[in-house]
Length: 391
Ligand code: NAD
Ligand code: ZN
Image (tube, rainbow, N blue to C red; front, side):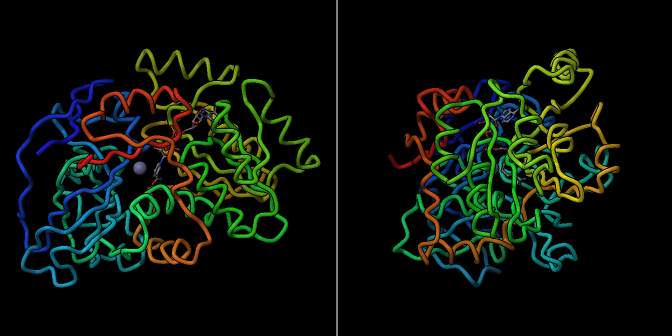
């Protein structure tokens, strides 16, 4: 089959690789009909996530048709149309039972790698390094889905791929980021990053009752998309983010701040950003922390900083004193996709939201290499690329 394979920083290729097979009775094989490139894939593309190997198949946002199931899978049949959560979860361990699906105890066969770095391992992920299980991803014609009696969710035939594909990751991710803000009536929520995750966080914050959402980015077409979602916007290349937020909130600061950017934040002229850039380029630091610092400094007293953006390592010069002094709550982590998927599917089916609004480009799987570059560079007004293996 054809699959998008990682060969090093800024080098992805569409290779011919062996078809996946059932290796466990709880597996299914899915023929991928639609798959997308995520901001998280860009961290792999940029080479900032450790434990990737040449030839690894990428992709964790995908859906398709079940073409084979293992003997223990009774909930799915050949021909079922499914969306697959990017987090792999067994459904039986203590975290899964507690709805903490992205913290599954059983789905990462390389848990020892994550334990060395983090103390304990989170769940395995599709197409996301050996530290997260080394699973082949879904930017491919076919994919093996482990724990298929738990993970894939059937979707109704009257909803197009483009409307349900993002239930695999970015819609639940934006929603959980907003839910983590414990929004109450009258709240002002600030969202850093108007990429797909930020845009879903904006929509979700309004769905959950925010009165105002203020979105921050510097890319004109993404700021425009944020305004189309009814957010007010700040261009961080033109305005001082902290001062503008203070003025826009009457001197109080936002009730909650969402970091939908993560470890590859661009600097906006601060000393911290220059220091991050220098240290990361010399491999003396792992993450660029401009946005994390700003969310903590901007947040109003007693507020919440919600962090869907991915971080990987050890952090320098994070103003934890400000978080302490203001009594902030910090919440973060990979999304518990299984927890949110059914309820968000209902929102789509009820017409409350059509997630396809984020799509800017559609391309055949064979064009993946150019699509990665375009999504990285945000050229041609690119917000989100859907790849279609059959196109
Ligand atoms: P993206 O790269 O498309 O968007 C990121 C946006 O942030 C860009 O528009 C960029 O211009 C903007 N940005 C960069 N520096 C900024 C700054 N200093 N201030 C404000 N905006 C800034 O990525 P995405 O797909 O929207 O994903 C966003 C983040 O969410 C990534 O870190 C991704 O890995 C993460 N993510 C996490 C989960 C999870 O489970 N927690 C799931 C999916 C994605
Ligand atoms: Zn993703």
